[in-house]
Length: 541
Image 1: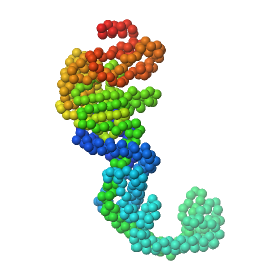
Image 2: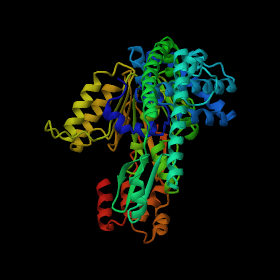
Image 3: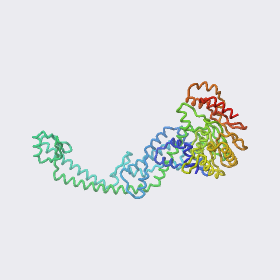
Image 4: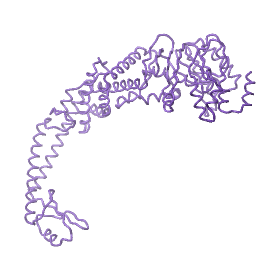
């Protein structure tokens, strides 16, 4: 497994998947089931990234066709249950037959859009219309988006409906004659449904109606009374005859639905192909739109054990800063197997750098474009991320104890091509022992196949030969006196000003430079008492 659930959560990759928009139930199922490509899937991963690149180019060339395609996606229903019932021989309902007819019509539209885009679509993405199934469900060739058990399905059904029409005509004629007879007799107007309602205060008319043999009592309220035209014996006979025909019609329609269900089952192979193709197409188009929306690029696969990110961006942090009217400082980093230490003061972005490296690597292995100017990488067997949230009350372990237990497990996999990210190693114990343990772990990892990045406050951890030392530039170029004047009496707002001046870029350190002491300067800017700060500076000396 590339990532544990906890690592997935801490890298906040769910934010990326939330932005990956699909519209069909089949695309949603594929999205939920997405698995990262592993190193053994390098070829398949490369092909997927190439497909996204092609679709991105197609969208930029003919965006309107994709708008139409996604509009069709929004109306695709999940018919897998209906198709499964057809396979099991369970007769489909009229609603199910209508939905399948609509689905078949959508196949034609989607295939048309694919043709318009003029790309040799891979077979697993290619929509295949099923004209014979369309003809089966639309025997009149009307193209109307409705479904009915058409007369064309059966001569018996056609004859029954003809007879029913004749009987209904006779019934209507008989009702009309009876209504007109009563109207002429009473000189009153009777509604087309054969009912007559009068107010109870009209005693004379009530008495007249009660004596009319052509009317029968129907219902009444506290104010009105309703009568209806009495059916003669001939109409009653015709109604019974009509009811018999309707029962025969229902039986014939059931037989036809059974036959249609069997016929649909004969096309199940093509139906399943199209369900899979719609899902895969929906997801691929979603990936392409995600790439465009985040100004992403195709990560380049390499045979070298390397992760190289040029001007990478953490989307969630970038979006948050954009809402505040601020810009994210892109991060450039090149990592090889062995250990890289990142140093720098708090608020310097070390944790964000770790998350960015892990997130972009995970995105690339999920077959997604990444928010960067360039990226080269080799697929990893696992990504491990320890961010100091490991306290375990259930096991009675402190943060440090839980961290050591996880690190012990991951150290057993260091001969595999993996990515290990540890934020503030051994932060949960006393500085002397924390430094010693961190130094020993780094020494153990420096010659391993795994690529390890560790952030730290400890001086000297990156001094060992073979350890790459990166440092966050932080406030290195800032005139603190000038910055303090600018802050004035802003109070908490001054923190935002510090963020504006903070340089989050990483630079390679070749000498044994000490970790910059931005923390004291930041504390001074935040208004901590000067006598305390001077005492801290003496301790540092």
